Length: 265
Image (cartoon, rainbow, N blue to C red):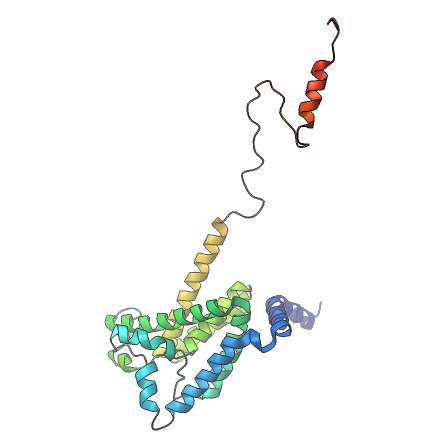
């Protein structure tokens, strides 16, 4: 087999089920299959437009910017909108493309509500890690410098990374999932900042969820693996009805009525 054919087979094995699911959903439901994705993309674009205006920067920061130095409950209330606040120092088209692709595939494969749950869990994991890391200090393992307490969280990027890993695990695209994890580790090694570490925190939470789901799936009984057929009760000498609804009982009664050898009629 040539190397080209081997690569084609590997690609089909890795991405074939995922591509088939996306094609089927788009053919059956069209744009309705991406309702959450299109809404998230449009909302992110709108927030980016507003926060770049002189009159909009303050409200967006007040409603959707989450920092480790903020009071916990205040930051928790801002977390839903923070998912759609892109970073000001990065091109917004990159964030929009990531949301459109990753959220779209996740919405088709996982469903609308599970996609939203994973995205928010990943964003919350990054926010909580920032607080814990700053509290630990730079000398501790996984600790962060005090200056990171004033850095705004990652926005949609942590959710995008977490959803990519979750979908790859669900669809058994293990090579792609591992590639995403390795890329995030390399990002932290090359440029160690709060955003990269929040990505790793989001990945850690998603991998923990996937591990628990695998463990529960192995413990759950599979169809056809019950306790086997019911055991017959003790033989009390009486005929029991068979599967034909009592045919064996009637046959036994007729046999008892026929006189045997040595018996009077």
